[in-house]
Image 1 (cartoon, rainbow, N blue to C red):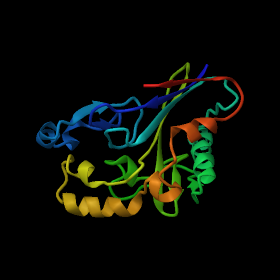
Image 2: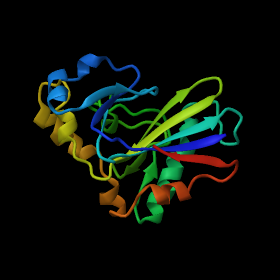
Image 3: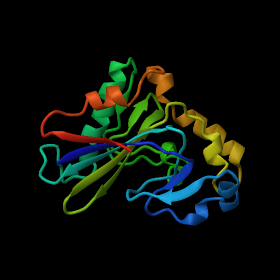
Image 4: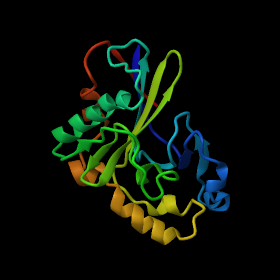
Length: 205
């Protein structure tokens, strides 16, 4: 069965991609800020979650579903179009990246510094991140968008030579949904736009 799980962080956490080494994290800074360091199944860069931001929805798609595609790049297209349709309904002007990952400065370290298949952009700035993990039974798509994009707390947790410079750069390459679609955009509108077809099981954690 298709499943959509709305995630909510009850405490701050730095979520690393599946292949990122723990050495990218300033462990002392994370401990001092009460930030737990965890790892997700899917790849990609680091994401900081705290207090309901970002809006995070995991989608499970069983193999053989009408939306299923074997091509891992094309497979994320419907995910981005789903987010984009909800954002457009709220008044945002957005597009879906239709192609392989585009390397940008810091994109291997930080999710919202780069651009991958199915991800949503407003102009040059990334609004929605999409990561994918597959097994024989199906595919898990982890999707998230910040309501308000403030990269400074994230930059302060990473082992980089120039944290203020990194934060300044990140401020130019991503945007929050409140900026592009207004403050009322949220999970209700997003879930209302889930693709038709087989029934979705929806949970909120």
